[in-house]
Length: 95
Image (cartoon, rainbow, N blue to C red; front, side, top):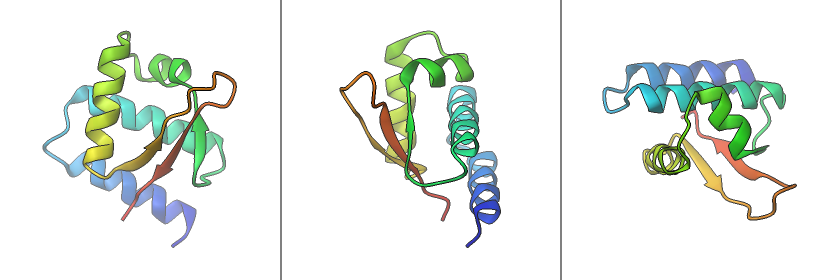
C-alpha cells in the first residue's frame, strides 16, 4: 500500500468513526500533520508539546486520555519515551 493510500485510509477511518469526538479528531489531525512532516514514515517521533499545540489541547491529562483512547481503538501504536530529547514513537495503523 502506498503512503498516499495509507493516509487516505487513516483519514477515512477517522471521519467515519462515530465513537470519536472533536478532541479525538483534533488529535488525529495533529498526528497526521506530524506523520506528513516525517515523510509518512512509520514509526515517527512526536513531542507532547507540539502535538498539544497543533491539536489545540491545553491539558496534559486530556492529551493522555485522548492518546490512550485512540491507541485502544487501534488508530496507532504509541511507545512513550521518557527522554525529553527523543520524543515518543507513533506508528499509524491505517488498515
